[in-house]
Length: 104
Length: 205
Image (tube, rainbow over all chains, first blue to last red; front, side, top):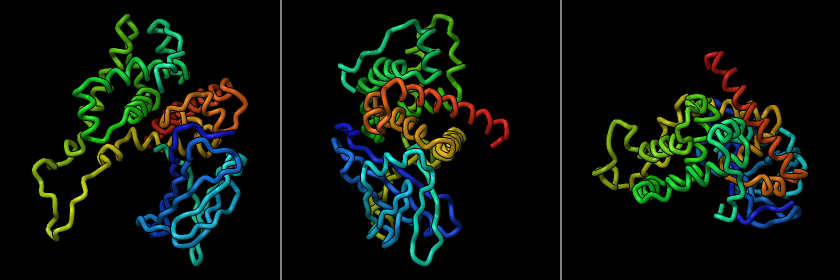
């Protein structure tokens, strides 16, 4: 298990919410040539473009803390949960909002 | 992909067409080298692509969405005419229509650099008109279905069609046993996307 020489990003987006600040967009960055124990950085903003100040991104069953819009997940953990659909953003004082992979 | 990756079989246009419709990896790799790359190397096209921020990957993605997603491969007559030539006309069209100002009611050419408040004006980087188009919407709808059915299929489809990774690279990245397994997952993903398209189309979505 290893990434290639080409770095790329996958984008995940939440279901639409009436309050756009409840929505979110997350980018998962795949650095070049990393192995299973390396981390994949995550950047999360809300539907108005503001980085998520604090929260937890539940990604493939793993909860990744988010601070100032940034977090990370172990590459091997991402692969371990590759058959799982639920991706949630948990934020204090708000309902968890689910989302999924986008074709962009 | 470099020229060293030209390891695809060169078959008749008829066989190539059938395999492209099925999302066959070597067939799409051949399309990349015989359709996308030659068009992007033409100086006029290269200039327009630079101007409007279009990449060769974008063109491949658009072609995939239209041909496989919207089923336009069925419009190919298969009467001996060049399949590559037919596909290159579509690619040329995408490049010509890439100008974001061409879809709006005004032209960006000649407009001021600053808005009325003296702030820099942002040039649109997305064609919202196109984003809202039926094809785009349907592609995303079908992709969402694919994700809900099996996320791994969605990852494989994304990596192969959006990022143009080879089956070998996808197998290595997603820890899939071998290239043949990736090809099989990709083929099923393409078929699911096509079936989803038909299903949503019938529902009038």
